[in-house]
Image (cartoon, rainbow, N blue to C red; front, top):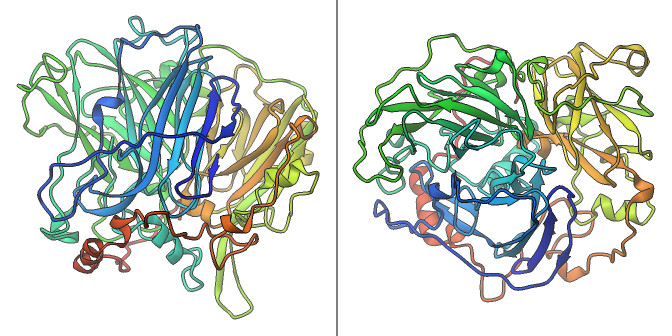
Amino acid sequence: MLFPRPTAVAVFTLFIGLGLAQSDTTTSTTTSATSTSTATALTVTATPVPSQLILSSDFVITDVPATRTYNWVVATATGSPDGYYRPMLVVNGQYPGPMIEANEGDTVIVNVQNDMSVGTTIHWHGIGQYGTYWWHAHASTQLADGIHGPLIVHSPNDPLKRGIDFDEEQVIMVLTGTMTRPQSSLKRYFLLAATRGVSPHHPPTLPSNGRGTWDCATYGNSSTCFTQTPTEIQVLPNKKYRFRLINSAAHAMFWYSIDSHTLNVTEADDTPVYSEANSALHRLKFHDGQRYSVIVDTSVGSVGDAYWMRAQMNTACLTALPKDFANTTYAVVRYVEEIGSSTATTGEPTTSDWTDVLGTECKDLDTASLVPIVAQDAPTTVVQRGIFDTGFTISTDSNGNLDAGFAVNGTSFVDLVYQPALHKVNQGLAIDSSNLMSVTYNTTGAVDLIINNLDSAIDHPYHLHGMSFWIVGEGSGLLTLANAETMTYNTTNPIRRDTHIIPANSWAVLRFEATNPGVWFMHCHIDWHLAEGFALLSLSSQTRLPKCLFHPLPAPQIPAGLNENSTSLGRRSLPGGDKTPALAGPAFRKMRKARGHFKSQPMVKAKRGSL
């Protein structure tokens, strides 16, 4: 859903399980959060709200539909999730943003007021039936600047039951690493002719549930940095906890672990799963956009014990690393007698990481080991196949400047923000294949989307909007349409998900039923790769797409200096003044001058993986 006009208010409705949306005009309530930190003259206006990520047993899971209303204000703020002060983009002053919790069949109304000076969009990532989802901005690199949060849908039909399979549940969001500058600045750097295709350096910190730890001695001083306390997860002994893990990062795969505690994987994206192979993992790996649920048994410790929870960036997925790169974010799992107890111990854990060696591959858990609990065979007959070759490309422009990026079937996605593809399709116009590759499935039967990852050293998390898919085949090398016609596929209860990693020099066949009419985006969920053109469109049941009347965007909606062919959101003046003090105020300018950290960092030996 697009909110192009700053200070505009929009409302849209989600019918959980149907995926429909409407827009209108309404009013919205502004909420905010403040911090009591006194480490700097800057006022922190973006704070984590840890309590919202604990799923209460008081929430009634029912099949009786209800209407749930949320009021959001999207705005700029100053935050310090890792102890380093920086400008952020947040919803209701929270980082991560507000959690939406609902039942399958509910109507969810979200009133959104955009107080930023640029437009934004909100995407409901993976939403289908019950399961673990999340929402995030899908404009520019706003996701990485803070606009994202969890979305949990319950159902009596969920085979994973509280009181049977687990006792308590909690959301764990592994958040994107925070840079010293806003991601929009890094994107401009990324798209300069001299640096096009070369990713900005990797973040020095990786917050979990809104908190991380910044190395103030190296990257800050007392006026811009303080030592942040890590996120604390309180648990009761002798319980089973369902941790819903959401990788909302913008850059790389993570290994997730808890010292001395094994992980029983019970959900992949929104599909309940089980296998003996994944019932006692030391570590779980997952990439941008993916979600997993794990059951953790807290019979390991006693009241007063504390263990490190670790999220380690998988450096096998990176081509190069900054010097002194800290690839692990820490949280504390603390055993208490009562949740919320103020008498709990406060010392840091002294526990050690698992001793087994981390793998060097950047790929999903073995697809065959992710066995859905609710069996659903994939269709054996396919009425249409589309094939896409994706990869990193390097060339020079007419001026001899480096022109590097990502392409799909030789075409790099150019985001013409004032010419939405849906509008063109609805008017009977064709998608311009010079700036966006697409495939049309005008059928109600099963179709295959074949992806060849031609990159020799880069692995990508591919995410499809609008529907989930069965992974019916995958392998190394290149798959042609001719070979796809004759090969044998796994159609017996294969894993269903919406985000899948395809390793370098590999292919995957994603099968789905094209029954959800729409113009659906598919892209790499590494933000920098999407910014460099890594996207395509899947048009499903185009003949059944509801006909709507779209008017050309009026000139007042397009910022000065831009036009309908522009690829920038631009900036506008807001009624009552620009509400962006964290980005433009004198305190922030002083902070930027003090830190002086936006410099090229020394790089160490290159490794295979995502740029």
